[in-house]
Length: 494
Ligand code: NAP
Image (cartoon, rainbow, N blue to C red; front, top):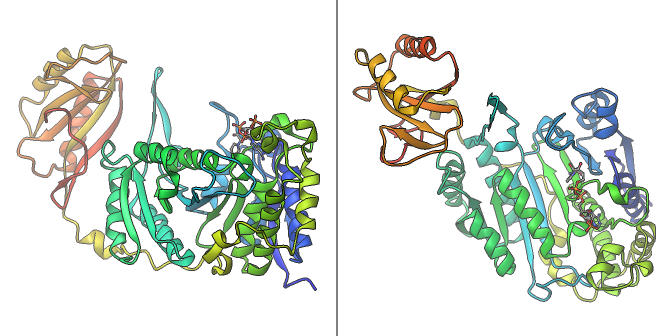
């Protein structure tokens, strides 16, 4: 008897997408789960019709209704053109936690086989450089804003700790570049350290992201859960999938407060599209995550066991795995053949890996409600703030020294003084002996003489006077001090 019906939006996607999605659906249905699939489009076919979002209104409506998505990969134009439809989907439904497990699998030989790699990367999924706020500030200089918020950080970090509790995991490591990006990655680290105090039974620690890459390559079994910002997470989760057999095996779930999207980590692999050769394991394991999310725990276990038995036996092996074992690709199983084998193995238990799944077997649905966001308006109201000046960015051919003297004259009287002129983060005026290869973009920092608060009218007047002299000004940032702490980085020697 089929179990209770669920409604799920299914997006076949581009390239190999329809093949792996078909495979996952066949396995889910064979496991006895009855799902009312709402098929919806996104990605290349939608861009081709002139919809620049890549996610049409009907697809959004369907997701609003079903709240759960199983999707194939979507193609994104590289370096030009429309925004990624994947990123748009994640943002539209605020799926803030991207969960990517990397577990050693039987029959999949890797350099780390036998070490018991079993880690989960929890990647912040909405903010960071993926906010997509980019500008060409001069004809030759591009800029991308890295946006990290306390709220966004808290949501994903709390998710990681709650996941550790749910799955009986014992350690959460935050991975950031806080040593360099003190205001953004530093905020993420700070929020992590605050929240860790609420989870005393879970070991917590911080590592710089480049060291995490190094440690993952050296001794990956030391990690349990890694929580990190968007770009870091994007890169190290692909690295982690390489540790356990490659993209053909890497599953993922994108979780928000109301919607969850399940997809393989891999892309549309266009060269394999329509050839029935791609490995569908990644999407089948993503649908195991989906079944757990739908509280179909028994079916999730059956499907996961069947995949493990199939890999363990090694009778149906797709091309990617055959290549890794140095075998003859002509003997490889097709996508369909591998799927048939998984279906035939439903109901069997793996000999080697059952125990590794351990605590995961009976885990609660993956999207249990999180404790409420801890920062209310009262917190913000209590923060003492003052604005003490401006950073003004200027496209100019002027020499930094000339510009420095010009701005010192400009501010000789009045509330502000010139603090420095810099080029791509290097202070060039007053000279501290550093040189920078100029790119026609300079930043001038003006602050109040006594460090006290600046009046709005004075800030605007300053901006106007600079603009009169340097019509190539491109943008302005206010310099804030919050609760006595500078809300901006300093220049060398400042
Ligand atoms: P990709 O499609 O993931 O493929 C890269 C390589 O990974 C393939 O050539 C293949 O390696 C291997 N591979 C990927 N999936 C596999 C599978 N299921 N089984 C076995 N091997 C697999 O990455 P890409 O070529 O960089 O990207 C292609 C398109 O996909 C781009 O438009 C990109 O934007 C998009 N993309 C979408 C998503 C998403 O929708 N979530 C994610 C990533 C990329 P070999 O060549 O060694 O056989």
